[in-house]
Structures are given as C-alpha cells and as structure tokens.
Amino acid sequence: MRLDKFLSHHLGISRTLVARELKASYVTIDDHVIKSGAYQINSGQVIKYQDNIIEHIDYKRYFMLHKPKGYVCSTDDPDYPTIAYFIDEPMAEKLHAAGRLDLDTTGLVLLTDDGQWSHRITSPKHHCEKTYLVTLAEPLSCDLIDIFAKGILLKGEKNLTKPAKLNIIAPTHASLTISEGRYHQVKRMFAAVGNHVVSLHRQQIGLITLDIAEGEYRPLTEAEINSIN
Ligand code: URA
Image 1: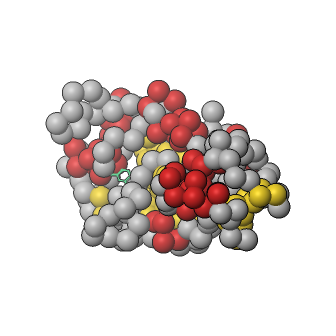
Image 2: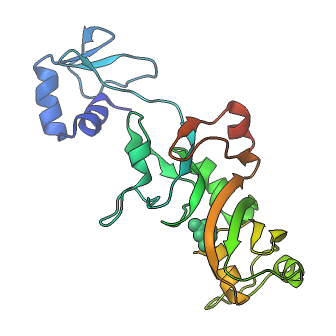
C-alpha cells in the first residue's frame, strides 16, 4: 500500500494534509524520515507519526466472542450497544461478525477481517453447520425431528429450509443444527410449527465450539481457523 493512503486512513486526514505532514518530516519508517507519499510500505515496518507508532496490522485476525443478550452484531446501531464493546483490539472497527445473532440471542460469534473466510461460514453453498440450544414455550413432539430433517417452508419464503438436525433434550429444550442462516431462521422454524422460542444460544459453528464465559473473547487457534474450508 502507498504510504499516503495508509496515513490518510490511519490519521483520518486527507491526502493533501498527509502530503503536508510528510513534507514537515513528521513521518518515519524504521527510523528514516520518508517524505514521499508514493512510498510502498511493507509488512513488519515500524511507521511513526510525530514519534508515535501507528498500529500496522498486516495479517488476518480471527476471534470468538461469547455474546450476552442486549448487544447487536452490527458495527453501528442507533438504539443498542454493539459487540464492539467487548473487543479490545487495535482497529477493532475492521472486524465483522461472520454470521450475526439477534439482540436477544446469546453465544458464539466469530469475528474476523477476512471476508473470504467469513463467506465460507455464511454462504449456504458451503453448508457450514451452526448448532443452537433452544428453549421453547411448548413441549416438542418427536415428529418434528423428521419434519425439520425434510425441510420446512418459512412464512413468506418459496424454498424449503435445508435439512436440519433436531435433538430433543427435554420437553421444552432442544439443540438444532442448521447449515444456512436465513433471517431469524431458528425462531421462524419453530414458529412455522406452532411453537415459540423463549431463549436461543449458539454453541457451535462448524467444528468451532464456544468455550469461554459470557462477555469474553479470545483469538481462534490455527486449527480452528483452518477448520473452516
Ligand atoms: N436464528 C434466529 O432466529 N436468531 C438468531 O439469532 C440466530 C439464528
């Protein structure tokens, strides 16, 4: 990347102003003053503006977060706090959720700045399974296992849902594994069969299982990152 583009982005100023700061010798790379905005920066270089290091993240980042209720997964929301509240990382605004959870849903959210990786999680073509723990208002009947496995028609949609695995744990508790992420899918699937989701928690995405306390986050391991393919 060109130095002036990098500085404009990181300092939040126009390229014209960047040119002025460069001319004033305020910018060093590996302790050498650089005055040319066209300079191509490389990974591992230490870039300083007025003697302060500018964080230079040149690798992809992957995290899991245990989302509590009451937070939205979008980057900005006029009404509710966002999950960014929990993420104490430089340039946290560059991270996005690979598959959002509703305001009242808890559990596993994967965050990354790698768009291709998150596409493999969210695109129905990749069949990435997501497992939810569900509490329901009404008792579940065993027929539902077959109904969900065959796919159901959600209100206002034309195509059946992809086969889903329902595991009844107790009369009003189940786990449900789906491989797509339609809008409010789990809640709508149970609504379509006359039930109502009282609480919803995402426990697993592909082979990545939530293993941290609510409100915590951690980087994914190499094996977890590579498991999404
Ligand atoms: N399905 C839902 O209905 N809500 C979620 O938050 C996730 C899946």
